Figure 1 (cartoon, protein in one colour):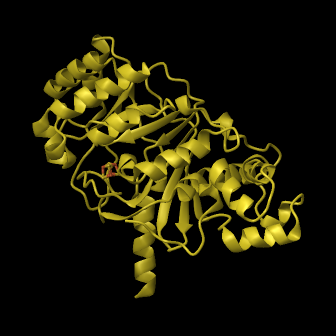
Figure 2: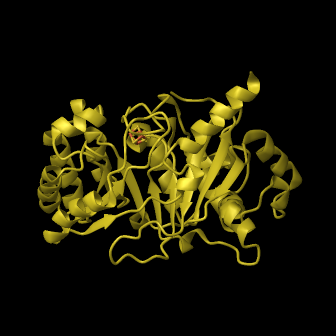
Length: 371
Ligand code: SF4
């Protein structure tokens, strides 16, 4: 499912593709690099700011490309230092990008870590039953330009927050592709966007600080294992047996654990990096000690880090967060086996931070306003 905008986004162009377009216009080879430097290094916000380009070239660029395909509609800052950017795309679709300044307060975790969480689709087709993003199904894939634009908007909003100190994207510790959508279902746009994010002519962010999180699209995990850039991988596991996983993640029918886990192992062996298993703890669904022990076995086999995320209640869904005691008991089973484990206290409750909730709320408000 694609959206065909009037003009392609400049933020979706690679150095090669932009060079080719400019050469067709009779421009020299170095011109593309000059333009990308204005966009990603100097972070200008209009074509006219590109002062070393001729006026006719700026006019051609404005007629040919969309400078910024995602407009900031709302920046919700929460007391616990999480920011949610709600962005509107050219077809009025809404997406969310989240800045988390202290994402993990589990045992021994540095509180100053800064993470950006980006989206790759509008909605999601995977239908995980606990997730706000998947409630209305998939609307469409994001283009590479729309994925990259989220990061430029983060830079701009951080610049606005601290006007004296210009924010460098490299000052963030991680970028996680964990927002709305299943990233590997939009594979080509994802890889193109991450290439732009990583390139020295782009945003220059190290591939090893970029984590792609998937619900378990096995063929795409194996394809990702072959990519030259060594991105990190996180698996949304959420169930340590097929029986439990299937209850909450329909994808498990197509790719049960017997297929998923060997694919994850292949990825991890190929890249020599520890992968992360994400596990949302939901009361009376997957928070038993039995599940903890089975998760422990999986994590030991994969040499994986485990990220436990107590469920964040979503309006209209019946699932509940287990008590703190139950959460700790679950985590203790993993800790006792010396597994690297984070028990993440969700950030951003007061800004609808559970993935997809801010977008849903804004869409609902818009519908009401239209009545
Ligand atoms: S949890 Fe992720 S994969 Fe599952 S429906 Fe939500 S966005 Fe999609």
